[in-house]
Image (cartoon, each protein chain N blue to C red):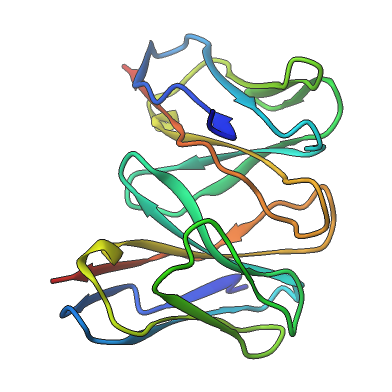
Length: 113
Length: 112
């Protein structure tokens, strides 16, 4: 059982380059989320998709875009990477039940130079 | 005021002791509360969920919830070196988005 799969695991970008982080879940979850985690800042929500066909901004959406391609897949795009976007990115998914928490992917460690 | 506050630590306890991790939250509409454990370089993993006021026990872990005081805690009994990690408190935001609001986490060190 794969759970939540994120690719790539590591990436180095030059300032101004673009890239897409991929996330897919095989648990038939309705909701998917993208977080970034920085030292001392905790997990901050970038974008989320409460259900297929919808996306909404989270706490730190600037510089990012997302696509909920289908129920399984939720991608995060950096159009013009900046050093401030150096971080660890986590994708998570959740079922639509009050008692259900998130299942996280293994993360993408991104460095922008 | 932060939405979810945790003492960042590190909290250091000897092996076999009880570790007590605390969390306060600001959203009075939150009904569900989650505790995640995160080892260094790894992703968070869910260890406890609590919905009702009072205590909930699962093995060596006990979650405690007091909605009137907007306070959640996690007790780890018989702490082991393998419990050394960062523990994240996460209330679920009110509404139907399913969003969890994470605290910064408390780093626990269990010394042999």
